[in-house]
Every structure is written in structure tokens, then in C-alpha cells.
Length: 340
Image (cartoon, rainbow, N blue to C red):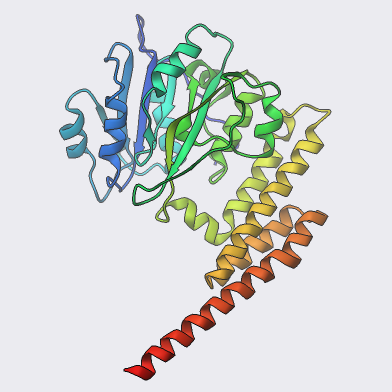
């Protein structure tokens, strides 16, 4: 497996190119795809300005092509991989097949909200220096319930100063909320094939190390949270923490030399604290294997005083509360049984 970013070459052909390429990777799930497509088509400025294409990663169930044709007709391109490439390679295929000046990789269960493309284009079309742009995003669940928006990075739109310090400590960008200039991928390469859970985080750090990044404070995208994803499996096995630790090591040479130790140390601590929070929640639900793997990998990632205190106090407290809830639940079930 290559440890370098795969190369992206300029698109073939000459002549005018669309401003946007909206590339939708998909695999074995069409539950939310219609809503995803309609959220893009509602903002469609026409084929001269926007390429829209779905890349199916050799699905074996829930073939998306009939739905794409029903909803998008010939307006939405469709490409099926000959075999399952894996998620990251399908993302890279999205970049390879894009023709627009700016590339937006939009997962088949996420959404863009009204104004996404219009507002970002207004900000970007006269900024040749900016390499990527992202907005706030809202969280939605499996049942289309809307939750909180991501943290506000700045009250005003514009280039974020010293953004490498912020993105170097935590992955605050969700994929549906970010667009990247295609020439940036051509210069820096595509998503690394030796990362999984943290593959997007590494890319945003890589871009921030070389280009200004624009921020739009309006929540113009939605990221869907649900349990039936490969990321959930990575959390249960602890691979999520392992991969984030690997990412922190890989990007260290990209960080400002005078702040690299501080940024990397804070990143490891935040990864560990989040892992312990997940461990505590898993204990409360009696998911002991997930709890153990997250706690173990958290300590391997960082054993700062803050992390150790979190382990000694927070996790046992969550376990105790979970045990009390289970005991009360058992008592209620026994009581109900005695009345029957």
C-alpha cells in the first residue's frame, strides 16, 4: 500500500470548465440518496457551471442507478466502478473524474442546504489564493432529526488566520461542508491510502499547510449521524484512535516548526479525551469491548495528567451510573413479572 498521496492529473481536454464538480460516492445504500440529490439539484446553475456525478463503488445491494435516473434524469452523471475499490479510493476516483475548478465530495447520505454553492462561489471566484473553503454544518440523525450545528470558528466570513494551528489539533471539518480547488489536489495529491478513519483530517491539514482556507459561518451543509457506517466499526475496534494517532505523526512535518510539538501534543490529548468519552458512554450501555479498546488506545495515544484524571474519575462514574440504570431496569422487569 503506498504511503504517499496518489497523484491527480489535470482533466483532459481544453475549453471552458464548470466552476463546480459535485461528486457523490455511494456504496450499498440508497436510503437517503434521493434527498441528497434533490438538495443539489435545487441549487443547480446548469451543466455549464456544475458537473454532478455519482460514483457507485460496485454496490451489491441497493443499486443506485435507477434512483439516479428517476430523480436526476440525464442531468446527473453515473459511473459504476468495476470492483469495490474501498472508500478512500472511490473518493480519489471522484477527484480524478471531476472537471470543475472546485470539487465538492458529497456523501450519499449528507445534504447541502439552500445557498451552499451560491454563497461559496461569491466568496471564492475572485480569490485565486484560497485552496479550500468550508462552512458550519448541522447534524442530522437516521430519522431526519436535526441536532446542533458545529462550533462557530469566526462570526464573519473570510480567511481564517493561523488555521493550521486549529485544524492541526482537531478535525473540525465535515466532508459535506468543504470544497477544494481542483488544482490543489493536482499539486498536493489525493487522499492517502494508508489512513482510514483520519484520512480526511490529514487532507485538511495538508491543504492548510500550503494554502489559505476560507470560512463561511452560515450552516450550509448537513452531516448525517447513524450507526450503520464503517466508522462505527472503527470505533468499536479502537482503530479510530490508532488511525488518528498515525495521522498526527504523519502531519507533524507540515506544522510550523516553532509550534509543532504544542500542536501535536494538544491533538493527541484531544483524541485521547474523546476516546475516553466514548469509552464512558460504551460502559454505560454495557458495550465492554468498545469501552476497553477506546480506553486502552486513549492511554497509548496520550497519558497527560488530564487524560489520567479523566480515566480515573469520569469512566468509573459512567460505569456506576450505567450499572444503576441496569439494576433499576432489572427490578422493574421482575416487578412486572410478579404481577402477571
